[in-house]
Amino acid sequence: MPIQVTCRHCLKRFQVSDKFAGKTGPCPNCKKPIEIPKADEQVVIHAPTDGAPKDSKGVSVLKPIKRKETDVTKSGLLISIGSIVAVFGFALVFRFTGENGTAPFWAQLAGLILLAPPLVWSGYTFLYDQEREPYVGPELRNRVLICSAIFAVIWVVYAFVPSYVFELNAPSEMSWTVFGITLCVMIALGALASAGTFELEFFNGVIHAGLYFIVIVLLAFTSGVTLAGEPGEVDRYLEPDVSQSTIESSSVTVTDATVSRSPLASLS
Image (cartoon, rainbow, N blue to C red; front, side, top):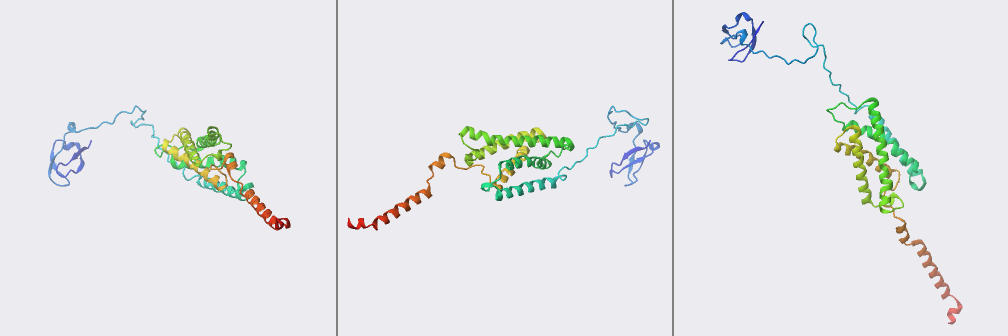
């Protein structure tokens, strides 16, 4: 059995036959004399036993499982972008062709629901933990649908909570400050849903949920939907009727002019 030798002068490593064990000879590299260790002086490192079954040669019959790298950020990306562009295109059409320059309620609800899956899927492909195997296939599809449904339901917070707390006739009557606070609460709830559905960190969940809710807000502006800042019934009542005041002023002017031209007025 060959003996592993390391020259103490040049640190060159080589093997020599065991018949030279305990003898002294020149190093084949630096030519300086070195002593070949005896067989019982060798340091043998034994590998730990793994307990795995072995073949006749003592080699483990088990093969290590290699991680399969899955790049989910490319597949379906064009579909997601196309869906988002298409929804925004329909929003513009409804704004210029719809009644009062805004999209009908059924179109708003459809955009709210249809945009959720592509945005949830796209956000996950960029935010998932690179050290872990990403969700793929049917499991990814199911988680995307669950998270999309939760995101859509969270809009109930906007539709009912401020109206109930501040006794508004419509959510659009809330101030922009209240709307901003409500939007932050919705994003926080969405972050919890993302973290629970896709096992994301909370900060990544905030980005994931924020992507959806901010895009929906932009979609509302594009389609002409008023989300906040609309005057309520009291504000409308207090606003002066400019047209009626103008008409009454004109009537008074005309009456005065008519009286000045009357013959009775000249006699008096």
